[in-house]
Image 1 (cartoon, helix red, strand yellow):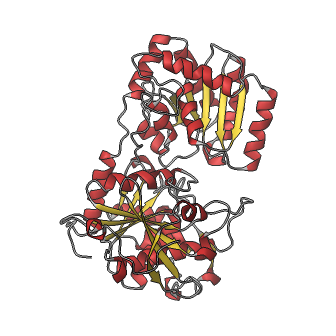
Image 2: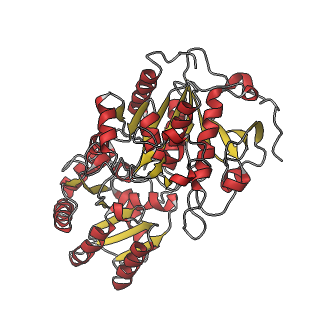
Image 3: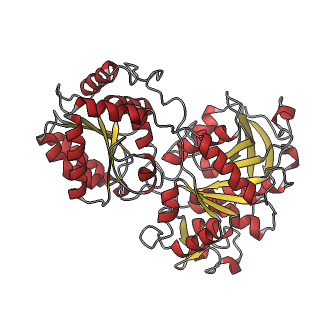
Length: 498
């Protein structure tokens, strides 16, 4: 049973911000502790924990079925009213084993459902996603306004992607004077809804304008965040530049250029957590380091056996990705015949668009000794693929940050990637991986040929692996950059009153 409203936390005093610490509420639609769809889930799990070392950082997320099931003793600490067609909700509170406080938006009719954060069990978007994530955004604003029973009030709201972005608008419309930071993890997903839904979402009519939430005749949650947020960040420095261009700005490049010119758009690279260490990872059948490659070779043998591939001395390529058009899987499929012809093999894991999944399955059926495809994602399997593979294929058409290329380098698998977004920011061409400048089958094939030439020179291959494994991809630099953004949003003083 969940405890009722008003029951004090046993460690309430300890949970109050220490003197001088900034109180941050990180608002997210997914977190890998309980439910993850993409990279946002990983970032949401690790960035607040890294921030908590220098601030009082807490997380707000929806009470999905998986969250409720994992926390049957969750305390209910507040009740929030509804507005328009946004229903009332409760706020639950949990504390993870490592001390991170999470607030849960408990609204069973909205979130206690099968499927994932955004889609039903048949992979269709929920018809009421606008109300579901407006409820999340409104809850964040209520906490920013102050909920007496909570005994804690954030000084800054850190919003993530379109599901949290509408909170920046609610802060403005309801005149709640708390700054907001919007992090854009992927500009292509904007949360677009018909104008007729303005009333149900409690969006004032005058906000439906170019200087507001209107985007080509629709409501755009993401545009609301970009327009109303105090500061905007993206997940790599290069992506912050790319989204101000017509090519990658998704129709919002003009507004983003204006924010950049105002000094309100910052690119901050994501990090990865310390568990990505091949010396200590419990998921690997053979731990290893860069001083002895026998462990990596043993992982490659284990991977081939697990996926039913033939014994081979050729290069082992990998794809660990959402299987969607953005990720350039058509380019990977086009490259498979030459990979197999040159003695290479490929292991693929991920899920996504049905046509991409089916095309990969068909290719694997054609080359069962050389190509293996596992539809679905399991992190232990992904870790073993990174550890056993020689090269990771990432011909993404665009990539705001990307995490797989960092995981791969840490595990001695050299990425072959399109030079875009965070891929270009995290891969040293010819030193820790291979970059190509245009996402075409020809340029991708040329990069694969460069990698194959390195594979045939073991001394060169080992040197690149050692350099890749030594890359510092932790969160420390990112935390310093985020704290600087919070400082700017608060007018220079992290101790400013809310």
